[in-house]
Amino acid sequence: MSYVIEQIIESLREARIQKGFSQRELSAISGVPQSHISKIESGSVDLRVSSLITLARALDLELFVVPRKSVPAIKSIIRSSQGINDDSEQMTPAYQLDDDD
Amino acid sequence: MSYVIEQIIESLREARIQKGFSQRELSAISGVPQSHISKIESGSVDLRVSSLITLARALDLELFVVPRKSVPAIKSIIRSSQGINDDSEQMTPAYQLDDDD
DNA sequence: TATTTTGATATACAATTGCATATAACCACG
DNA sequence: CGTGGTTATATGCAATTGTATATCAAAATA
Image (cartoon, rainbow over all chains, first blue to last red; front, side, top):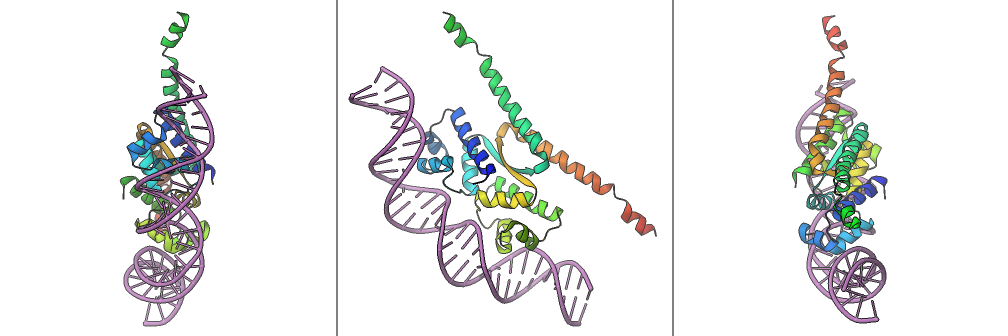
């Protein structure tokens, strides 16, 4: 199993968890059986492109092939969009105020 | 067949042609049979992710899943990198000089 | 024109995917 | 600890992929 597949699987899994979906919930949304989602996430099946697209769509992701020379720029964009999410999480001090109470 | 798959197939085909490879040459490089490459390019098979990665690698492409909200930015990067290639092609007047001779 | 190259298509076969369904194992919580 | 939720695993089956190989028709080249 290649590094690229591992990265893709990791992206799917992280997106699922970030959205707060269990595998069953993702299954209900996407129409892919939970048992298959488990195998996909564990890397034990070599899924078809159509299946990957189906899952990605349910997780607000999209599949691309890009020139290898553009990879750093694209990783930078992905990282910065994740950074925004991280910032929004850090900018909710409500929990800290509760702790002070 | 979805729009995303069509786009991916088109990217593969364009990259192959831009590199000046025939399907047989790509087959030799990638290890994927020519007959299968023909089917992939025509959209008549739903290939596995591993096969897509193999072909992409032979064509200096890489597969990504990206957040849907990042899609416009990524398309912009891909378009601008292609623009650079177009400029380099236009900046080779050697053929025009030969015509003047 | 003859020859070569290119992409499309066919055949046969082993392996695997994806689906449906059920269950086991694991984890979190009260 | 008991309970419920989550993930992993198993079974069976139809359909398809990917491979090897060959051939054809069209296009390109010599």
